[in-house]
Image (cartoon, rainbow, N blue to C red; front, side, top):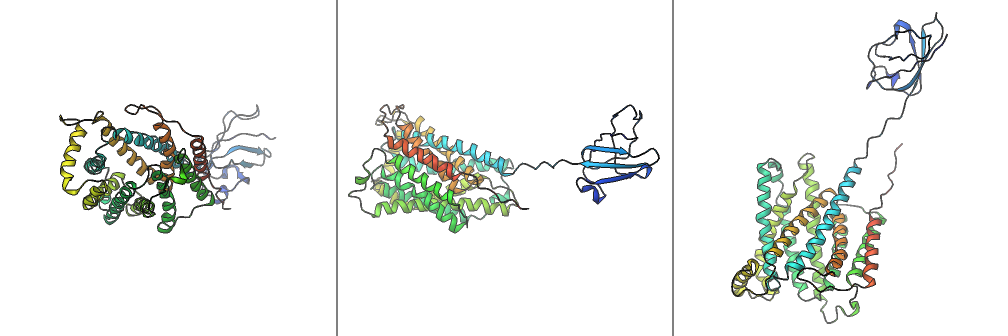
Length: 433
């Protein structure tokens, strides 16, 4: 007389080593059954007794267990166990990839808004761009350290985070100050369309420096994607310009200095990435708060900008002796106060909007760099270049005159997007047996 019954096992592990194997037969000898197995029996036919025997608690999970009773005299039970595959845990890179995509989208949006608002902020401050740059640099130091102090008091920032080596922040500050000084010097001597084109060497510097300093290795599709992105940006930015005549009459030293300024800025971003990686080891797996990097980096940058202030003022055509009066007039225009203030309509609203957006953009870029890499952050920022040009071609408040875009702009934008897609193509991971 035979019957089959279905059982459900609920557990985690068994002491018996054979019960960890799949598709084996186990013999339960009546009352001498294994004490750790529990069968929850469901009546299958009218021959089944009303009360099902039970054995003590089980420690594992299986499905579709068939128990065949050989005879009434033989209490041996043959148990056939069919197990299902253990579901694999989701890949830890999946949530991180989603976070990178979301942060990248936010960064692109803020980058476009930052470029557009910078142009709008220069409408009332067109005579005082140097004042706006210095106000932004030193204003961020106060704001960032205020936020850092608040987060420290709240316990978000620990003493260990504050105690990370400051020599790296000093290196970040001097590199960013040198990048600003050399970039400003060369920008004063270069035609406008050539500046964003030469700035795309920033990505090349990042690839080279991250490979040399951080020991990173890039696949062929990542290198090809970066080159396509740079090519697309050059085509989009140079659309409508006479590229053959763009640098005519310009000494070779000025494009070289602009390329060197990109190297300084790329070096600063690589050191920031290294700071995050090293801090994770120092903090035993904890992530370094981004306001620690922003605050100390901006503080050292402002310190070195003070050293370069005479040079920077002369590069902007302002004699150092006239700098105090220039800054005083800049304050009047920024506040849009005073009888002598003319042409400052839109201040202080537009400059404050620009400063707020620029701060949010810097925090977003640093957050993206923290969870990805400096190269990914650069690619995202480069995507904002043609989008910003398109936005600035539209009629805007205080900039009512729009401009038409050539087909080369659309072609360059398509190449740029193609490069981003190629760079982010996931590589197959070799499965270990």
